[in-house]
Image (cartoon, rainbow, N blue to C red):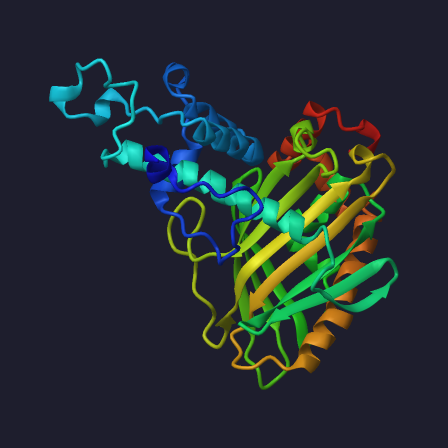
Length: 372
């Protein structure tokens, strides 16, 4: 019970209720990026959880974290967290003081909770997209399906679009990553569609902040979005150890944010713009080469956006799902399938941190080189 009070009540992965973007403190985010000390890992197995997270292995870290909680393994409270009178006691570095409120212990607990929350969100989204139950099909053509789901308790609509992309995984990722090139393929007309897209922060190989401005027909004001992007590696073979039927995937989480990864507030919307909220958003990429064989990448996109409108007509939902989302996916498929000999190919070959990271991860799991 003490472990649950200190670390948060156990919630099985895939059963945590989805909410808005997780609120994170600056202390929590900083904790996850610090170097783990090997000497501490010997005293406290939870340090191995933090080490896995530092290597961007969120799902593996969460599984180990849950295992330690299930086994009632205590979280060590280090001697420097104790008052001077207690630092010489035998238990000063081997047992967890559940009343400890030192910045060190509080930050570590917050970081561990964050790992569990991220993994639960990823697993829930993956399970959500494994079935079409409860989804209304709007259009299925050209190998693309668009769907929506709306509940009586939530005025905002969840949109889902998916299909097979005849392209290598890295090429599909490149089309999304190169934000300044979205103008080449994202559908847009003068009165509706993408106006600008800018990567404001390239915090790490798989953590970014992106700003978008979208034209909307009059009399609705122009909308903008500030999106926090985080990649999650679900490609390891451990993904299928517990459930042989599950897939090895790359998951990209998309959520609204009011702060940068490195800290500090993001810019506000333009004078007449209205900022939309992305409550739930994800890209889930399933490369066929390591999931039963074959070529190409299955792509699913799921999002729930609050457009900041008092009322969303059903006709607008139908237009967005049947036409705009379908066209977006169709353009993406064509762009990803024709990367060779373009600016995308030059950037992939440039050795930028993002591409180096993805190639390194692929090599680590023996991903077929011809599909990289």
